[in-house]
Image (cartoon, rainbow, N blue to C red):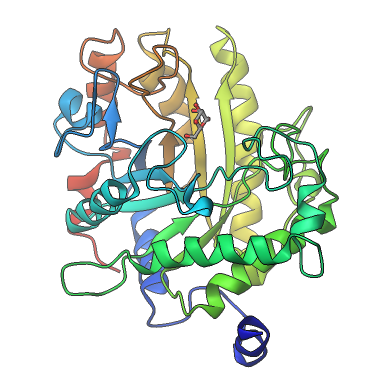
Length: 357
Ligand code: BMA
């Protein structure tokens, strides 16, 4: 009932209204994209390949002397009001990490890997027609609204030392054009997906959250991407501020990665430009970074071809030796990452700290 009333009186148009923390971040990112590509890393200050939960630490900083310009955090588990996310990160520590990143002038992005509300499995349990059942009038709609209330409470709690809300890029329901998540292409129709995304946006907006930039983030598609395939699940211009794409290198073939990533990024960037929105490589990496010059020889040429806001390298897991995508002390790719950091096209926290909106 609360939502029905609030939604009815809230003007749910154009995310990032003037004067809000979200609009400030958007303006800042619009400026920054002409200076270079911000380099991001998932969970950067939460843990690294040989440590976890140690204040001030960062694999990126320990390699190149600076924190990433963008740090990603994941809300998976918050839907159950758990104290820790799906990778074990305490939400209280995450909040501290978000505040610290904001205080140093860096930018924050949030993903969300929620459990399947029908089967009780994780995000990768694609069964149960969960999306349809969670939408308004579905038998799990009140469960979903409770989940969103918990997400909203966390995002509302992200305040700086003066009590102002910290702006974040929220990237829910990512990689929907793959078949692995319960919100993916084989588990709901494009229209059900769009309703899922819009409902998420509308409910969080109705809570008065004015510190969210919304990201739409398909995965690399099978075959050649087109604007049509890229926009198949697109919820609409009123709901999205940033167009992303998640592209990983899957084999030793560097040229194949570059080719695939160029095609995906080319579509995302052209869609973004035409609609006056931001673009980013919202997830990337080559698991284990087996090629020591991957950062300067694979990633850098790709980034130099497009005007995008940021690239987010996926996490360096402390508890899974194979799950690492970024540099770390002692890894063979560390010297190359220093060159990547020193290159004029890449931006880290110190590079963006002084740039306001
Ligand atoms: C995936 C993997 C998982 C992890 C999840 C959320 O891509 O890295 O191991 O649990 O992201 O961080």
